Image (cartoon, rainbow, N blue to C red; front, side, top):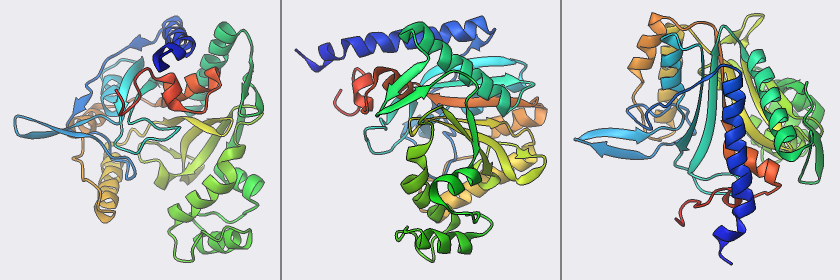
Length: 331
């Protein structure tokens, strides 16, 4: 029997999940939209590289997210929108990564990231109930209760709870590094940057514990790690951003969207400079996106959710290749 034949039950489940996603958003009055995959500005995150192509001597890219274009639709008055699309990132394959993958993004005007949390809870819980006939998910020897409400845990609280580190990695970097090394993180070096030290500790001691009983919204990221998100009003050094974890797996990334075009340009330029320092490809700033922000973006929330990883959870598999009919590169 071919590997494609072996995948038949999983691919049927995948199709039902996609159908259920569309049904959920249709019922909640969201408009399904399509935006270009080939773009001039693929995204500026320092650690995400795009696939490059050319057309009539112009350098173009496969998008790493439809976010810029979808926000232009928000600015044009489309208040509830979603998209299921192929997304591309030029990164090595792994059990959790495929360079071509399926992304679900949705945005709603006159909302913030707490509204997106509610959407996410309702979407995933309803999919499980309708397709698996249960609100209990078994994955990686964990039993996860998908019944809302889900856990909300700040980044600082997670570091205290799972790494026993009280210093803030971004405002108390020297103390954070000292505490990390005292706790046995010998891979954390004295001259590590704040980001480097944080990620070493997070990946070693925190991530695997997130969402192992209830899905976890990890909230209150530093503003420096959320270039497209608005700052918290009562704590401007933090951003209204969350990542969703289920059974130690990152499933989604969401913001209350930044609406200030001047601050947005400054943040994108900062990310450009970071890419320059790290000797990674420099991408042009999306001027059409910034022009749309100047015209006016209402207070909005938005999210990107990895559909392949959601299918992995529902299918109880640890390899993304199991849920994609033709995984990269062996088409």
